[in-house]
Amino acid sequence: MASKNIAKRPNGKWRARYRDLAGKEHAKHFARKVDAERWLDEVTAALVTGNYVDPKSQKMTMDQWCDAWLETYAHRESTERQARVHIARIRKEFGPLPLVAVDEHAVKRWTAKLKREGLKPSYCFALHNRLSQIMTDAVGARKVPSNPCGRRTTPGAGKPRPYVATEAQLWALYETADEKYRLPLLLGAFAGLRTAEVCGLRVVDVDLDARVINPAMQYPAEPLKTEMSMTAVPIPDVFVGELKRLLDGRTDGWVAADDGGAQLGPWKIERHMRRIRKKVAGLPEAFRFHDLRHFYASMLIASGADVKVVQHRLRHSSATTTLNTYSHLWPDSDESTRAAVERTMGTLINKTADPLRTGRGSAART
Image 1 (spheres, rainbow, N blue to C red):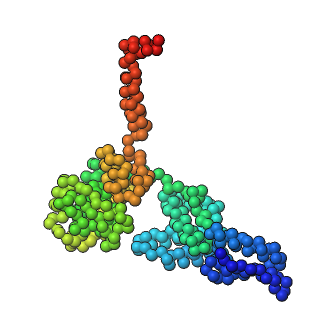
Image 2 (cartoon, rainbow, N blue to C red):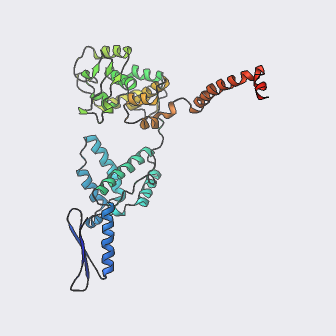
Image 3 (cartoon, one colour):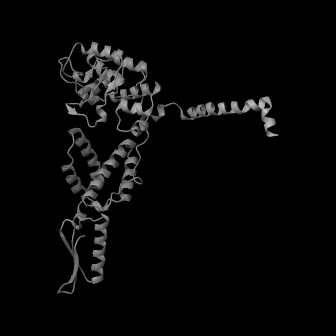
């Protein structure tokens, strides 16, 4: 427990002092002893409950905390870049304000403003998550007593309905693509690899004998973020044969390579996708390489795969992510329920109807 005491000063003021859990002394002067006691009681309660905030931190602004937070945010370059983009929006709204002034009402007002600006629900959700992450760390550093972000402030992620290309559209893309981009297209549509994973895939990661693809790296040559992302993807014989043909005897290097064998960058694949999608009837203007994963998911679901299988093949961290994205692709739940009830109920009715038809049911009742 932190130490504390109250002493009367020569000028008649009451000086209240305490040492926090780190041993640092804090003091404040009051005209009345009862006020000094009340202040110390509040500090003691905050220390006991874990809601203590360093008094000097109460003047810290959101701008200052964001700077301090970024100094400790050590992640891959692309992840840090995304965090800085999010923080720029957070600074725009809260930058000059003291951290303690960012309360639940302020967060609600901000998310409402983002929606009025026309930002996509998924982006509003990402910005709110980033603010929550920053404020959670502020609580841990005893800069604020609590995180103002929660279920009451979240704008919701929305329910994505990804565009799923038809088989005809997929093969039209394949036929239209330059030769060096055909293998990446197959890896997206029939193995569910993300753009950066395709560009980071090495020939040694493709085990043709075992008929599996083992994602391990992402562009340019960084390990994948999670263990789930490294889950092996099984492929059938027809895919093995096409891989052998397109790899053309290569035993090392990058799978997605340019004419000189150099690694293809994600922007090159996306740029090529933008060019060829215009030549395929019915594809939306926003169609990206990543949308090939949706084709892969829809194909698995149509084949009867359950949510856990689809989750593992897409290498999602949880089944919730899979359901949030693809639940609308599974067969209609109402009809599935009706069919299940009809099968069981029909059996029961037939069993109870037989005695009634023969008259045994009436005799039993008399």
